[in-house]
Length: 166
Image (cartoon, rainbow, N blue to C red; front, side, top):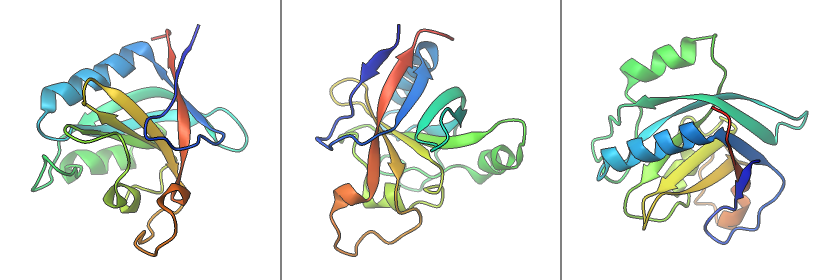
């Protein structure tokens, strides 16, 4: 039986979900805790499970070094690790994850404007007070979000399903 967790942040959820195996869910949480006070980060592999690409299943992940100069407030993938992942055709890259060690699991303008915002799935793991996830699909990838339209229109929240399968 799958466990469904609603997103944090008070955003009305639209259609869409991401399913994560429980062991991977726990592993990502643990890495994010271990890397605190820095933001932990990595990528998600998997596939869409519906024709509209609004439902996703995560089949793997890779933890990457946070190369940001201010790694306690932001994340940036280490290019030495990031480039081979992008070039690898054996795994289907579907998204990213990173932690917010001291803030809520809610995407910042920088999160929504990052160079990898065109990927369909993004997960933020807040460590306050204990790990909780916010998953979203970016509606306006690679856009400047300081244009004045409501922040809730920048992304769709995704329901998170924790699957018992490994």
